[in-house]
Length: 225
Image (cartoon, one colour):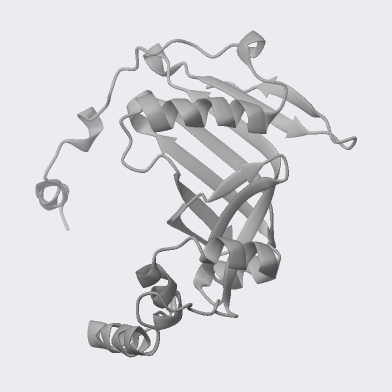
């Protein structure tokens, strides 16, 4: 393929596509004592002022035992000083990856606010009681969907999933309790570092990262943009 042919395949001039950030800066003096407290403050702003479709959407990146990475968008369903929680099929690709390699990265891409939060840590399964309590809060259809989908497996047609869902809907009609799938549950990511990224002019962004200390405390370091 010639350079001209390659250029003709791109519908936009990607090299010139950029936004100029005009946001206020992020200073060490304005940070909370812990990354979870700082995340809570930013998350509240994202949820109420950020004009975000799903402020709890995050990119979860995992790697298998051989180091081959994969990423996908998942919804955050809880956070506290113990870590950040999401739920999934344990037999999905991310579930299999985490069983082999528990190190994980979470990225919250809050683009309208020119902010990102990047969490790195170790994922461990939540207890079954905690999983069941969350499962009961899901809409009936989502409970059935957790059974109907063998997540990440190859299927021949969409009809397979629809048929499985219809069978489950007949077995567990609205109002009847759906059992929690044994292959489905939560992961809690205990953070080892949490970076708060604030876009600034001239690509000279503010990047402040909390790093866990052996005694359970945190220290903050500034990263070059």
